[in-house]
Image (tube, rainbow, N blue to C red; front, side, top):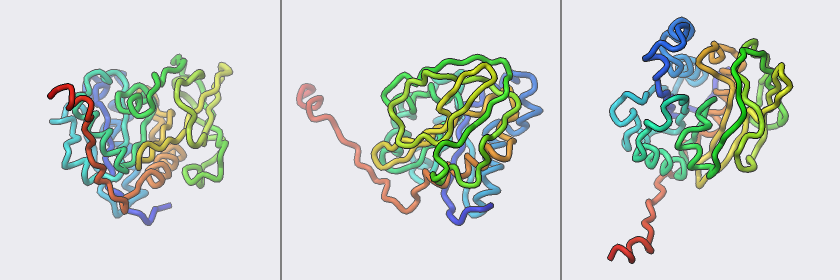
Length: 249
């Protein structure tokens, strides 16, 4: 299935695991990096779109003001280098999300500076990595992100994420995952902040080829299509703090 919309898409990945070759199989699973695999999949769903990638090591983390100004959807994958993301970059992304840029946060990006700032909670959760089977159950089939998605999606091996997941009440709870150990997790949720739409989706660890799974690719494409709002005015003004200005004067 292809989408008729043509959003400008940037797939951001910190890229640290790929640079360190940790785990040693990551280069075999994702020869172009996790970001490259996701971008290639999305390019197939959005043939008329500009789909590009960026990493932590790029100047300005690849997320300059000019690039964000022309981006309709930003996908964010991070894991072990959240603290290395510059605050000024987070400020820029935050500003553009509030202005209407779509944001899709993936897997351990739940701990990213940008998501915790947008949601205002720790986004902490329970986890263990025993390579267990994950079943991703659709609990809101009427939502566009669930369109054409099998229920359950069967992921043979995956890191377990479990409740309690410290997030605010989501706008939509679309997917719930269950694991062999009995844990459950709200694995697909949406939020709105300002004019922007946010979709968090947890399946996709660096140790497993989850982003090659056709149904996972379909969910991400649906998520991109849903958060994208290319026709909207994203010129959200930057508001200064009058109290701060008064005290500084």
